[in-house]
Amino acid sequence: MASKTVIDKTVPLDSNDNVIRKTELIISGVLRGGVLLSVAVILIGAVYFYALRFAGELPHPTFPDTLHAVVRGVLNGDPLAIVVLGLLILLATPVLRVAVSIAAFAVEEDRTYVIITTLVLAILMFSIFGVGAWIGRPGATEVQDDTLMFFFFVFFSSTFAGFIGALVGLGGGVFIVPILTLVFNVPFTAAIGASIVSVIATSSGAAAAYVKDRMTNLRVGMFLEIATTTGAICGALLSSVLDTTALFIVFGVVLLISALPLVMRLGEELPTGVVDHKWARRLRLPSTYPDWRTHHDVAYHVAHVRWGFSMMYVAGLISGLLGIGSGTFKVLAMDTAMRLPMKVSTTTSNFMIGVTAAASAGIFFRRGDIDPAIAVPVALGVLLGATIGAKVITHMSNVWLKRVFLPVIVLVALNMLARGLGWL
Image 1 (cartoon, rainbow, N blue to C red):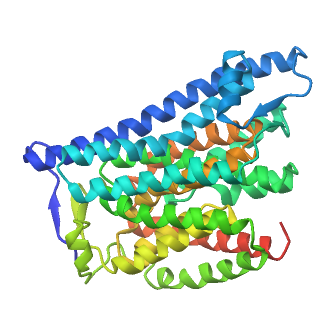
Image 2 (image 1 turned 45 degrees about the vertical axis):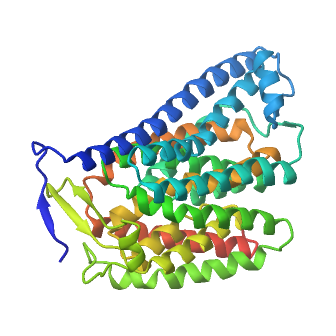
Image 3 (image 1 turned 45 degrees about the horizontal axis):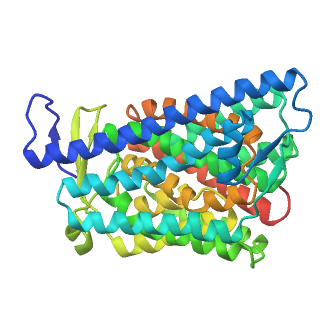
């Protein structure tokens, strides 16, 4: 069994632990601050928009989908431009988190992770300002549905999606996309744009708490983000030239097969007999997390880093190629290949999915696929649900978390198969 040591908050940390703890608090603060600022701006714009809408002053509202148009609209008092600005702040939060992490690792004098995180930031910048500008189509786009009934229904549905997403490391798109497309006849591209927003909202809302509570393995997340962001860019590029119908079917079947090892270990609370991979030791990936149910610190090891890294590239590729959250693949990679405890796998996945989504968010924004009338209730609902989920997970065992995660995997796989077969 993995070793355990009793948590004693009265014992002072050594200087290195204090520095690492400061890094965690800084990153958590950036995520929390980005979420609060984005929510404040979104609510100001939304209230202003619906006030004008009900007064009949916005008969055919359109929203800007370029940064220049957003700035011009905000200066002119356009409520939808204010809403889009709030969404952009939310979308930029994972990017800012990566940038701040570079400085935090520099303070730790950890040159390895300064280089790793700088590489992740460079990939993100290339995706947002390079690929996004190349693929995007600037202009103003008409909103799909701006009724209050639509707003509240999507809000409450997204709250449930955010809650489940926070528990199992997903972005909630598996619930949101079918609801939007089947119930409200929202175009598939707009539903995918809302799904991207839900992924980032889940990640930012839940990860702020997980990092603060030391549930997330920052180094595992930062290292694997190199693979996921690269894969997301490759997927977004390939999506414009490949027919993804068959790919939905293939990945749905692969996901079901990949879940089998999890079924075999459904009753396992902690991985046993795990030996650190040589890369894990060099990159200082093994760590501990506090189990507040038992009041113990749980130490764990990290195996098969190369397999995990390869699977993360595939997860990013799926995210960019099919426009879905790839949290299920991330969790499976860390749980099955790298043999991390389930709590660490899901919380670290939450930490990473926002960055993976941010790598393709610029592309969806420039395409006009992020409709604020759809994205706003999704973002607000998911943030509320993710906040609740982040509080619940600390009181759950790894076994119960697996029992929640397993049916979600099956649901995601069936969702992908249904899309591939044309049923959605």
